[in-house]
Image 1 (cartoon, rainbow, N blue to C red):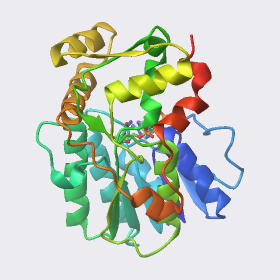
Image 2: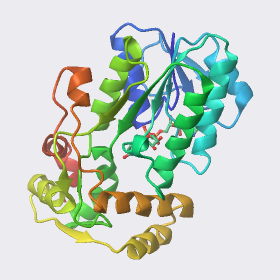
Image 3: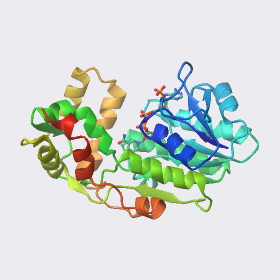
Image 4: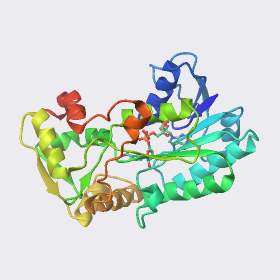
Length: 286
Ligand SMILES: NC(=O)c1ccc[n+]([C@@H]2O[C@H](COP(=O)([O-])OP(=O)(O)OC[C@H]3O[C@@H](n4cnc5c(N)ncnc54)[C@H](OP(=O)(O)O)[C@@H]3O)[C@@H](O)[C@H]2O)c1
């Protein structure tokens, strides 16, 4: 039985659906009161648990053979990953853990809290003695849907400097995860999941403009300007500071490399940003 955490989110909901398409026995870990997206079939077992509540995780992981460990971005996310790993150890069944982390996790970048949280989770996983695999996706194309309002008014304003980023479609991340969860032979592997190209934010803005039917200009915000904007918009400070750190990594060019792992795992090329933008043209068009 495959247990999927973070099951109602962007990636997790697609992972559950993809595993069911392959006929796998799936348990989705949801929060109390949630029954998951309407698209899941009735065969998906839903179990309520909270990453901060070890007892609930014991119930959620009981009987697991494989666990997809995806936690949300949160100040306690490293502790949440540890809680799931500890609950997996307590099952006594040595389930295989597929840790959904972030690109760069194996390079242990300093001062990038989102990645650093996954580094800490991975260290804990290695020390647990459980069999493991890591999925390390780059930033998702889907993040741009959250900036659609600004794109519609002709601006892509982020602190991304001039660095290229090999963003990836979250659906390709989910498809790669399904393959790793449903098949054997991935123990100890770190799969880096990227799109097919490293693109600067200038190039991304141009591609968004092409589907939006207007010029979209990239404004390279200074980090402090971006932080002030996010705090002004009511972002949680921990998350806002984390975003600025992440864009600092992007600006440095360290997130530009293209990996073959999506195609290696799924058997088809990773979706391009242009394809993603075209599919969502209505959202980006004023
Ligand atoms: N976004 C990116 O560009 C990017 C890139 C690389 C890696 N990542 C990594 O991807 C992960 C986020 O994936 P995502 O975008 O698919 O997440 P998401 O859409 O934010 O979904 C988070 C999931 O976790 C659940 N959840 C949140 N808090 C919980 C709690 N306390 N107990 C139990 N479940 C809880 C949510 O449930 P509800 O639906 O009930 O809230 C939801 O199912 C993070 O680990 C992040 O570091 C993200």
